[in-house]
Image 1 (cartoon, one colour):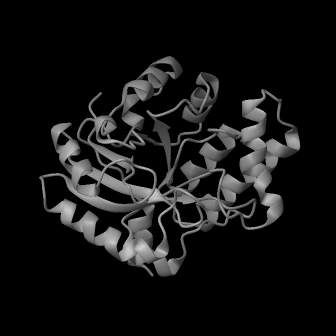
Image 2 (spheres, rainbow, N blue to C red; image 1 turned 60 degrees about the vertical axis):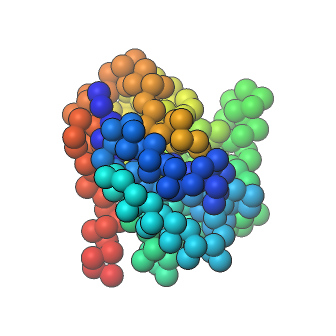
Image 3 (tube, rainbow, N blue to C red; image 1 turned 180 degrees about the horizontal axis):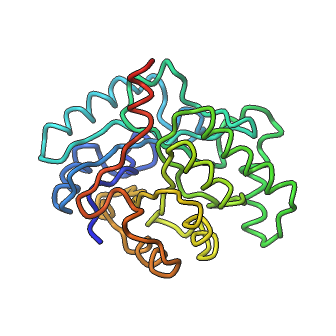
Length: 256
């Protein structure tokens, strides 16, 4: 398995350690053809990019695109802000981005105070090994599904990291809407049984490093181990072995 493109990397504009230019150079050294710079979204309180920084960030990413043979895309790892599926990327922001990722994070501005349970509630249960209730799993699953239904999301990031959803139901929705499910090489997020259940839905995958430093650009080790254990067919992963994904966000913007 050889990674073609890495669509989840961070820079100092969120919580990464390096610049877009440094990420691009590292991607070329890793033999990648394409990379996306995907900062945490605008509602992330401590680690998200600020809207007032967007113009400067865009300039740096576009300059990085000219530094190497690697294509450098502008991206965002948007936050799912509540059970309604609301995300922190609006249509007014769309023109600035090539790739639209989304996931559940903890320290964000939630849509409603009660929505904190999908982030903090999951963190508490994961940290203290508390079994989630059926209603909790249902609410988190609903948040993911509504986000996919209501936003042209390309990739759901690290599904079930620090929270609990019915992974197969989320994967079914991804398959229906043309959203990819990420297999992260940064941190374990799906059990082998959950990943195998996702495979059975027909969803398509991408492998991403979620790199926060240049030494991890293009890293696939953890993901490859999970893929082997769960029996994920390599022909269902669309950013390896010379293949490129067909992202729904780009298609959506053509018809705006």
